[in-house]
Length: 194
Image 1 (cartoon, rainbow, N blue to C red):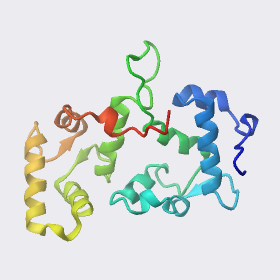
Image 2: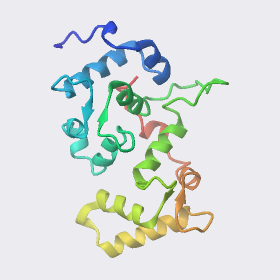
Image 3: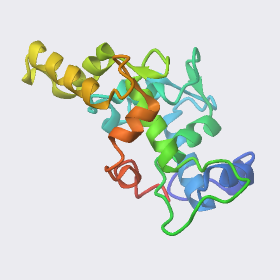
Image 4: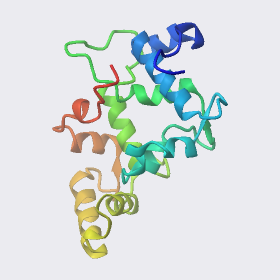
């Protein structure tokens, strides 16, 4: 592999991947090289163990949940196409570019970024963030710096503020409304993924 990088012909379905993800050819090649570097045994797929070797994910309190996002339900392996689809969510949005009519929602749209963030909380995939799920994330984020009682109060207050229909949980729509003032497009973008 070395410093030269892969040749475009090494990546099957390159044009389709570029079309689907919005990545440039150079970015797809760079990400393919990164995928191959993580795939130390050249198996053509990655396991959760392979992704746990990424330092930034290893120290991130939500690292395991982010890693799980790379894998379809019930699967322990991910191929390059699935890998790059997840990364496309973090591609910066192009300024001034609006959604094209009759085209699917871009993978890096505000909606896609919000859905990615929501699923980090909604661990049972029931479409709602329960008080317990909120509490789990808060525990991961603050560790032992806050008592369980304080965390429970924060979780309860968060649910109460966002829960518009009074069901004691946060739906995706309620989640999106509660973060509408945040610049998700910037906060969930990695500049290296253009």
